[in-house]
Image (cartoon, rainbow over all chains, first blue to last red; front, side):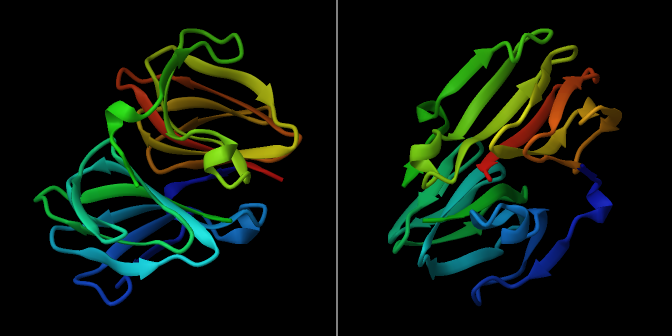
Length: 115
Length: 115
């Protein structure tokens, strides 16, 4: 099955009350398209200053794979800078946040799988 | 947890006997890092003419999300052209193949989840 870009779900939204908004281009549309194994598989776009604010995971874990741009990443309480090729993993019970700090937008893949 | 690009597993290999080779930059390293919910979550790089040859999925399904480049995609027997932003889904029992047909390398995300 092919789903062209225009047929995908694209959402612009504020994430957990953070600065600015992110654009979420869904790759798969929730658990029903993921054999019930997870709930998010998306491309995420953040312009400079926009963020996915701090949140803690319960019953699942989230992976980010940074494709372009640079981010200030809160890795369960520790602030680090991330860039293209870096992978972050937030386990069940841990928290994270990410803000774009580059003029170039931050583009990443996000995957949430249930524990 | 942060895994920098250099600490990720990068594999160059021929896929299912196809033309050329692909480079697989693992995002997560197999089932043990995916709560047992899947077995592949990788960035895939194919230079012009290289392919992931035809294969059928059993007990899992695979999603590709094309990031750049153009591909000739075999969608369970139907040949279509795919490009940036297109998503393909191969369900359990179905087959697929993809070949890079652009001068620009084909870059995509691949995710295999168990049924």
